[in-house]
Image (cartoon, rainbow, N blue to C red; front, side, top):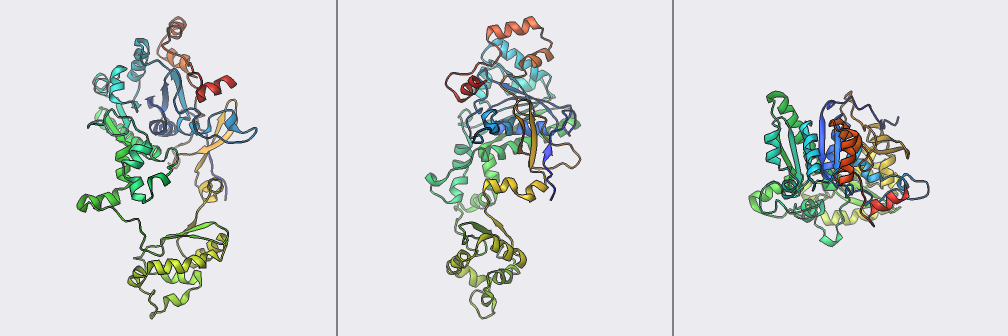
Length: 428
């Protein structure tokens, strides 16, 4: 199939062309929303601390000589592509004045700073909304904007996976769980995007913006809503024991795994599965496995019998047999296999980005398509403070004023010594 990887588009196209976003946020969750807003055509100005976003150069980059990871921060590119960056000291009067001036010209203001920090930096959300009634203000936090933990820091490992119930619902011992970087963050970033788009649509009708808020812990409860809705009634922890023998993962002869996924309620799948596995006798009316009730009662017995059956045949052959029989299944893929998956490529799951010094590379595209809508990256992630002068000039500041801001320490990138970002800077 043809590789439908998306390529960069002009800044002026896209459903959100003409929308200006000011992002005062770091790490992954809120910035990932900003990246999607940029993909949709918005102009996104990323306000970083003078030391740069704390997320820069802390995750794994591609290994080996000549790899892009030696030149740019590949994971950071995902959540910050298509933005402009200005480094500002928010603890200075001039720095706060600059950010307020940017917000005054914006349509959307996104932040993941805790309320007490926003107040400290002169960015109290209620005050910002009073000053700019058409502005959409979007807050992303660990715990929400009210309650005893409102000013408590969080990452997705604590708020989303642990306290949000995800880890407990998976049924694994806490020390055996290793969530991957950004799993809960990216889910919450999508929630933030949805809320912002709804607020922009509302503003188009009423002329008024407003506050939208999302949190890591509430996104977790929504993702677990099927289980939590029942627990709200009876308080029972959902069992992680799968009673359906056709909802299992089996190891094949080549130590690869295949996931079987067919519901109990659809009885049509049992004969198909028996045919694929060569166990047609299990479908005979007199066999104890022939009924849904019989299979539920003997689940452990059936699964134990199936393990050696699957272990005798390699994965590729199982995929062929199961596919020909009409069974719902999928291979458990490695990351390299996901990257090469023709189904993903056919549907535009990856995008090509052009970097001015590192060249061309592929990244993960937005998790949706708007056909004909021009949704794709608007360029690479910026270097820290790369657009500081240009953004300040857009506010009407002259060369002398900008020079004074640099000299006073209100703007400009200054890496903290002995950090991953400072080591990258030393290579330049």
